[in-house]
Length: 361
Ligand SMILES: *Cc1c(COP(=O)(O)O)cnc(C)c1O
Image (cartoon, rainbow, N blue to C red; front, side, top):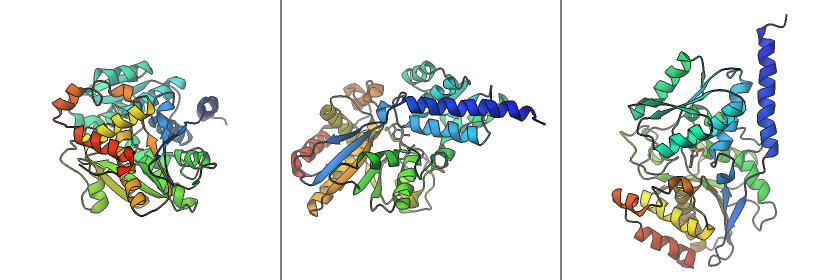
């Protein structure tokens, strides 16, 4: 007897089709070469994830989380979707929830910037506020139960919702786009860690495909991830003073798989912000802070490669657009208010591009 489940399966079929059709209408993101005329034999590329419809690499994650929830039978018709995120994940999930005509509620700290709330609401989402920023996870879980919804839980599911063997994950797309380059297999791929999902996907993909590429994670000084990488006993920090949005966490998130990462480079916030500014000058448009963290780590690796006479390529990720940070990373008063001095790091970055290598100030 075709029970009520049958209607639900029809709805699920249509929901999966909608997401796939949206994907089919979309183009892949660009792999942008960054000229390094002073480092012969070394190429640098940035995979431009800011060009997704919702402006960041979280677009891929949100699509994967929705497909995972739908195919698990966890997401059904008229079911509100709840997430603990005040950032890019909420914006991207709101986009997919609207596509499926589902209500989307982001649980955010009351201190969340007005621009971010506006971005979530622009995509059709709602915000639910908590006074204690540390309580967003618990509150999201509780709220999902109360409204009969589904708690997406990006930090738990990011690594497993992405199909790491292929199916157009970011790793497969990068290697596909490198096919006609001088080096078709990069020496390094550099990314950050927020959920840890991107580094897990990249690390698994290169092992599965027998590529010699190593994965390097650039991590803010205040983050727990690099401490955990060095010593598995460090799982949480009292707090994470990190200013770089999207990366750096006070607790080791379940989606961070340290064994899939070959190396971590610690990057100070001032170095990340200076690098984001210098890269923005070179691209002619602004990129976000975590992209700066990535560039700083790339510059360190390229400096080492050049010193050892190695040739090869380094690929990293342009995670999101800098327009989101006009009042922070690109605002000198904000930088001064955080007691940061960008001048030494700006100089170091300009010297790097001039061929002198990265000399950490
Ligand atoms: C989430 C995020 C990252 C880190 O990616 P994960 O896959 O979550 O580790 C980097 N930069 C930005 C802007 C992000 O939003």
